[in-house]
Every structure is written in C-alpha cells, then in structure tokens.
Amino acid sequence: MIRTLLWIGLGMGVVLGQTSPGGKLPDQSQPVLVELFTSEGCSSCPPADALLERLDSKQPVSGAQIIVLSEHVDYWNHLGWADPYSSPTFSARQEQYARRFRTAGPYTPQMVVDGRIEFVGSDAPKAESAIREVLRQPKATVRIDEKDGSAAVEVDRLPKGTAHKAGVYVAYAADSGTRDVVHGENKGRRLHHVSIVKELRQVGTVDDREAFKTQVQRESGSRLIVFVQEAGNGPVWGAAIRAASR
Image 1 (cartoon, rainbow, N blue to C red):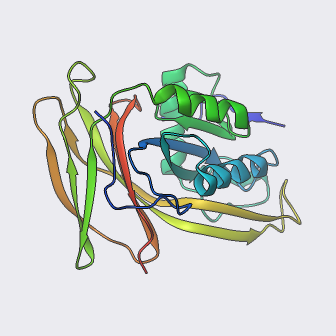
Image 2 (image 1 turned 45 degrees about the horizontal axis):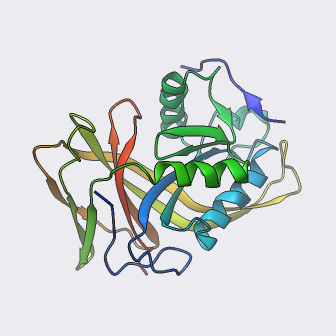
C-alpha cells in the first residue's frame, strides 16, 4: 500500500557533448528533472524504483533528456529496516513539496517532475505524460565543463518573465546500488536503485538579469547533477548532468 504521513516537521537546457546515463545522445533534447522520494522500508516502493531505472536507462520520451534523482527518506526507518541511503535532508525536501502541492503529507513512493507535477511514483503513464507536459516550458541553459578533477558550472540568465530568482543546486549521486533487505516490509527482497543522491546543496542563485558561474569538485564514482529551482521547491528552470567519474 502507499503510505501517507501527517506532517513530520519540509530557452532550452542542453549538455553539449554529453550522453545520457542510458547511452543516448541528447542532441537538442530538453533536460527534465525527475525526483523519486523512496524508502527501502516501504513495500510499495520497489515498482517505483524500477520505473525510475527505466526512465534513466531507456529515455522513453522523445525530446526529453530525463535526469533522475533517487532521494531516500528516513521516516520509515523505525519499521525494522534503516535504509542505508536515507537522510533527513531528503525528508525535509519532501516536506517542502508537500506544503507546496498541498498534499495530505509526505508519502512514498512520490515522483516529482521538474518541480511542477507530483504523483504516485510507480505510475508509469503519468510519469511519461508529466515529462511531455513540462517540455513546453522555457528553460535556462546549464553547462558543466570538467577539468582536472573539478567542474566549471555555468547557468545562463533565467528566461524573462519566469522567476525573479532561483537557486542553483548541485547533487552528487551514485550510479546504482543493490541491497539485500533482512528486516521490515521488504524483508527477503533484493532491492536495486539508480542515481542515489548522496549529497544535495545549493551553491548560488540566478535571475533574469545576471548569469551564474562557479567551480565545484567532482566525486569519483558519482554523477554530477546541477539544476536550477525556484525558491520553496518551485519550478525547475534548467538542469544538466555529467556521468559518474572513474
């Protein structure tokens, strides 16, 4: 079943020369950020984890470069299995979405597309239709240029009339992870995840008058994902990804 909580307390973006995690060239595809709030302590989550992996590897929506984030919440850890990928940071981020979308509270699995549309995270038809819907929105271009173990991040000005200011966020995510669950609702199951977020932080802001530049470190074995999001977990105005470094 899908578990629901009461309150617990939160132009076109193109990555030049970069292939998607599934190996397809993005060409002039528009990046779309897909977040999944999940937990290894939730029996309804494995189908959503599988859907996120399919979106990541198959890139099934024409015209979209789907950039995925798997964010493991910690509020199910008391049910007998402490999700090793979980963090209160992601629970707090999901609470912000719950307030913005006016849902009854955070729940798993939940998928959020470009900060604009939320739905049950295992609903594949809804996921693809939401991705197609957000392709109509203008985007700011985000670029990532790697050199000597670091990365230069550049974000163009926001499209006129979109937002006064937005945050620039950097996420480091493990390509994948597999875990044998020995307790809790998923006891006896081997669970697989992709693009598991290890760290998410804001590195700056951008608006429709001034672009943004910064330098960030690369982490060995992690995808580097940069996205631009309006305050209060609002709409996402751009994103880019670099594959995991080796």
